[in-house]
Amino acid sequence: MGLGAGAGNAQLENLAANLLSERGDVESIRVYLKLSRLVEAVWSDYLPRISGGSIESALSGVFSGYAPQVAKLSEELGIDKSSLWKAIGKRKLVAGQESMIREIAQDLMNL
Figure (cartoon, rainbow, N blue to C red):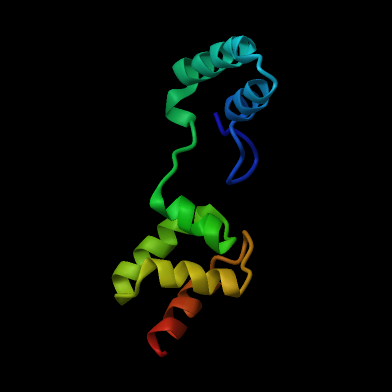
């Protein structure tokens, strides 16, 4: 279900399905699907959700936890979210450097 310590974790059931399909053993996927359904039923409110911001952050090589700031600043300053994600990626920001996002957004406004 994509759970783990960082953005972009692959879902085990998808990896298993692909591997088992390549091996011609699709029936074995039932074990993984059973576990997947259990996780979904018990912890549905805590599962990762994919959004456009998640995809843009991944394409830019940036921590997806910046999404709320990117959304806020792009609206506040009237700049394109995609441009902001790309600019953050070019600066190679990592988690803990959130204070630099406003500076990057302001730099975009001055271009």
